[in-house]
Length: 224
Length: 243
Image 1: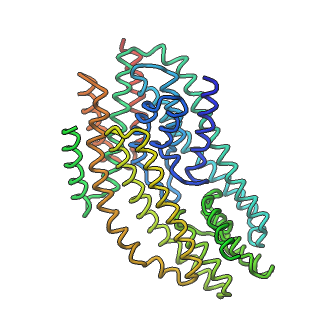
Image 2: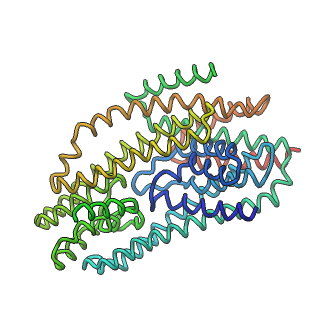
């Protein structure tokens, strides 16, 4: 269990770094992060299920410019860890709750990181204007270092939340409550995914393509 | 030597947002990427050019190489400073909007939707691996193209951004994204619903419909995260109180 905790911490940190700083290869995408966490824990099924669920939440976000958004990568890693730690038949809901809190904390941490970077850039401004390559490289790597620490901190907080939830919430939850939580988490994810899709596609010329896709998806889902 | 420097700049591109900040946005990262390309300049000109390259700049990260390459080429060619500053200002908007449209609103959600559909169809971890490889093939190619275009065209880099393939990609990706998302949604709904039977399944359908309506009705105050937290916390309280 402790080894798994360390592995999830390392994975969450890498995933956190991937989102913005390095290398932006979509390791931070929930479907990828969840699958990797599932592989680490030997439960790919849980990783995929939570990866799909958080990917739907991710559809709600278009990460352009300086927009503020929750961070679902480390959150998915933590949620997969939670699902395994809780070992409940319908543990998905409670795992999602922990994951959503972690995503919120991750989003706040990104704002703090950007402010810290801004302060560092202001201090180093004169050296940058002089074309001091040493100052430039230090500043840039310090930003990456801060992001690395941020990813580790967010994942750690998420894993602590998992431990607290397992200790105090899991024993108090009825079987019916477990299912209710799973229903709530799944319905929220589906709604977020659908709303995000409609916002991305818009109500203009591409709406007919969305409708065509929906018809095709419904037919395939019905046949399968 | 130029190829080695271009290679070094390309590798640095993967960290371009590492020092993202509210004052210069990706300006410091752009300076970091452009630095190897400026090494051929005399020391005084090198420092002055590096100072300029690290100023305020914004672009989609995958296309930021076009900016770094173009600004570095302009410095190497001895283009007047005022013209370089104008180039920096002129590039930020298009490099952001083209990248957002092609990648964040096109390539990424299309592949993500197809992956979700494949996972619900039993594709498992293989589907995710395929997503990772295909997405990054496009990602790495786009970064390399942008850097080379910027370095090749210099101040005339706007010509590269008008290449036919960019326009065609935009025309194809819009409908493709809508089609893929539309195709994936019913499959994910069915896959998610299969885990429930009886009253949970009916509750799921009603709650998802109401939640979708709320997100459409008040997008100014409700996000997926907020709604998710509210719903799950209410369910938690009910789950603890309901034996």
